[in-house]
Amino acid sequence: MNQKVVIAYHGHCFDGMCSAAVLTRFLREIESSALTFSYKGIDHQSGGSFVPEEILTGDINAVIDFRYTMSEKLTWWFDHHISGIVNDTELQHYRSDTSGRKFFEPSYSSCCKLIVDVANSHFNIRMSELDDLVYWADIIDSARFSDAKSAVELEEPALQLMTVIETYGDDQFLNQRIRRLAEGVPIEEIAREPEVNKLFEPLLRSHRRTCQIIDEKAEFSRGVVSFELIGTNSDRYNKFIPYWLYPDARYCVAILASKTRAKVSVGSNPWAKEPRTHDIAKICSRYGGGGHPAVGAVTLKSDEIARAREIGKEIISQLAAEY
Image: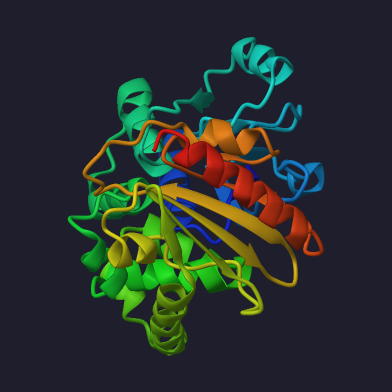
């Protein structure tokens, strides 16, 4: 019997892509029947992110690297965001599940690593061919680079692929690559594909311009670097640029906007001399956002730029209050 598997993953995200590949390999190992996979990237929405019920059309439905859903259609769930479960009703629903197929571990640095560790510890499945994939997903999602310079210069193939995915990580582009990564094709081979290189080169030029724009627009006060990228028609940028430009910054708050959304991006400097003392996910959750203790965001509608600026100012005040 052939079963249809739908994997919904955090879209435009390197860890989301890698998690989808690892779960594909994992399910092929444990399911006795033949499987046909389809993939759906899902992004955070204004007013509170959710998993659209209409995408869960498989015999087996998995949601990974994204918030919980109480849908009866959900078969597998893996997430490591502290905001993955947003209220007591969802928490009780998750805790009452007896399937042994739903895993929530906010202490994990990447969802990809969570899936691999669960596969090993709970199902005795070791996917050593994917070790390099897991390594880079963990480095990128936890920002455990050696320094800001290496994160900004984008010389590693994995970082080049990350850059392309953050802009072009739609289903059509990623589906075939997720399947190849699940088969053990190295990240470097995917990153060196002509199509990926063709997309990366203009993004690299744009990235360098963004470095200049942030350098010109950023303000630094009381440990917080802040800036706006309004009018660039993009709500994405390399999150390490501010710490490369301002190594003494502890936090960063950026106001972003595109045709589809406005966004307040909040982060902490992984190389700061003084350790982080704020839980950014909790701060963002007060405004309907979420994330991790070290990085998070608030997503709004595209016409709510004024509200994004207001939220940004409030968050800057909170982060700078101890100075």
